[in-house]
Image (cartoon, rainbow, N blue to C red):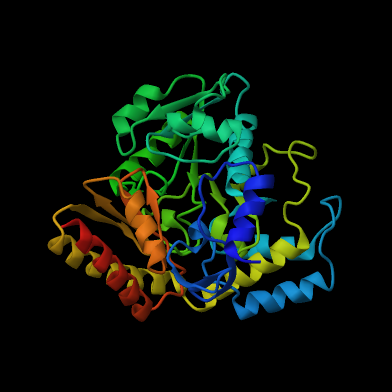
Length: 393
């Protein structure tokens, strides 16, 4: 099928929640994808931080093929070897605790919200989140998210969420009441345009949570698993959360989410308190286990840090050249370029020129390339971007 045929079929049968989509991707390899008409693109969005190892990594293909021919799915009424081994590897490289597996970042955050409420007294149910946050599209996670456009038309929203100012500890203190059970935030905010939590803020948050007996939850759905130059973004702060949520990069392209909770917190869940039919099934866990092993074996967090520095240096050179670039920010391979104007048109022009990126918060070009990206590929992306930005002088 050609792109036009796929486009027609989609418009006829798929609910339009994604707006206009001008290309249909049908093949991928490494940092490249191809559309239905055979055009090749350099993918610097990576499925929105999902394809950490690039597209169709041979070891993931091998692991998935083996698992598909052995056992695809069984319910969580039974022990699942791949699930147990993945949990063991995650715990060994994070903090002492236990895991719950689900299908997405939103589900992982839902589990964290539910566990936070069940782990404290019944009268303590409020959760503080941050301005600029994004935690998912379910009713609870969209309420936790500080963005009115996502909440429009779906009132009444669930009660029990307050928004404090990101990186402002005094604002957080003002939100705390005798009903507060947890504080949830992203160490690096992605959807609002790549904003990193300040180290002092994170240290003060941990102290505040300890003092008030409040749980601290880090949403690392987008920023976790090597993207920031550490396996987990919280490692940049020397601050451990009580819970951490993961998804996106974890499955290497297959859908899986995870909640890691310290033992004292995880004990708030008992048999029957939470579940997921597909969560932690053998197939997705086999892919995730392989992905995580490769990230660790090949020290991809360090590679992400090195390539991120290289990429930001190149972008800073463009900033000197183009006065409408306000700021280049980010860490590792989670980078934003803030402009003086809306950047949707630039994203579209990049796509036509063979580079896939996206626009966050209206005026921020967001770059989330695979963790295996090379200097040569970064140079190619910079060349494409440079030519397009030149039209706006």
